[in-house]
Length: 265
Image 1 (cartoon, rainbow, N blue to C red):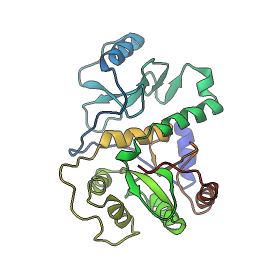
Image 2 (cartoon, rainbow, N blue to C red):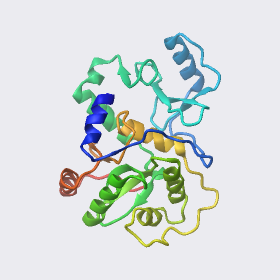
Image 3 (cartoon, rainbow, N blue to C red):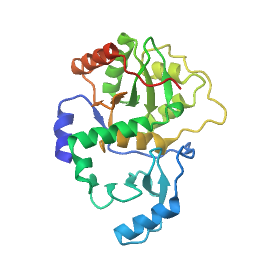
């Protein structure tokens, strides 16, 4: 997987998030599904053959049946597992692992991706409304130059999207947190990306906390384990990792013509 990522980055279309730093202003809301932490921990310990070590904790993700194994150590990435432990990521070995052959096929992977897309908490994302319906969910960072290319394409096409704002660095996450908690998040994002007035966004919303872990989790799942920006996911479950000046805009025009979109929430 690492070699594949290196080849893909060599094409110059994406930014790889080498570190995912935690920030103080983070608050994770309960997921929309009913998680059973005790059962998840018991299954994890039984299948791995070891007790959960001090300094680690298990938390639900926004995706039903999927949990994150988090460390208290700053900057350490999360591992993930499904409640049956037949699907894991960075648990037994680096990368993804599934014991279901059908799930590992190209068709099974696309079906898996569509299910994750359907579970996205759209109401917790930033709505960037332009002329079209909401065509995509984007995982994007203000300190990523390829994300700026994506924004220019979206502006030119008038494409509305749901935004998952993250960062490649601590400063990028800080800026994304400011966007997320702005009185006008869409305006703040467009300003941060150079596509709107510099003063857009307004003051922070009182009581708002940026859900850092949730934002990172979404990128991990939508990017199929590749934490790179931008990630663009369309309503049919198809996705693009990275953005260039030719294939990306061409795919965007296809999506606009096809009229398949996310619901507005």
